[in-house]
Amino acid sequence: MEVKVKIAISAGHTPNRPGAKKGLITEYGLTSAVVGDLIYRLQKAGHEAWIIGASTNSKQIQEINNLHCNCGLELHFNSFVSQDMFGTEVLHADSKNGQKLAQCIQSKLVEKLKTKDRGVKLGHYQQNVRKPIISILTDTNCPFVVPEPLFLSNNEDLLKIDIQLISLALFEGFESYQHLI
Image (cartoon, rainbow, N blue to C red):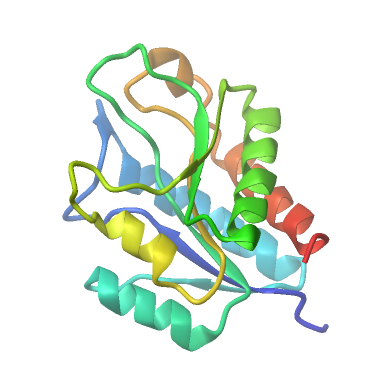
C-alpha cells in the first residue's frame, strides 16, 4: 500500500504535567486516548502517522522536522477559570496550508461533536511571552495545528467527550485536507 500522507501527531502534555483537570479526567489522559485511536485510523487508511513525544519542546519540533511530514497536530483540550467558556477551536500559525488544515479539522470537530464553533485562530503570544504551543506551530517545517475540541471546565462540553468520535473527526479532517493539497 502506498503511503498517502506523512503525519506527525502529539498528545498534549505529559504524565508529570497533565494539563487541565476536571475530577479524575485529565487533559493528558484524554489526549493520549484520542491520539492512540487516531494513529490507528490513519495507519489503517494508508497514511504514515507518527506519535511524537520528546523531553522538551525543541526536541519535539526537531523530531517532527526530521520526519519530513506533510502536516501534523498536537491535541489539547481547553479550560478556563469560568465555566462560561465552551466550544471548539483550532490554532494555526498563519500559513496558507496551516489555515486550510485548521479549517478542515475545525469543521469536522464541530460537525461531529455538535459544539459551538469558536473558529480557527492564529496561535498567539500571551502577555509578550512565547509559549511552547506557539513554537510548535511556527517552528515546524510543515502545516501544524493545535485542535482544542472542548472545554474541560464546562460541564456541557464534558458531556460531549467521546474518544472515538473526536478521533474520527480529526481523521476526517486530515482526509479532507489531503484532497486540498
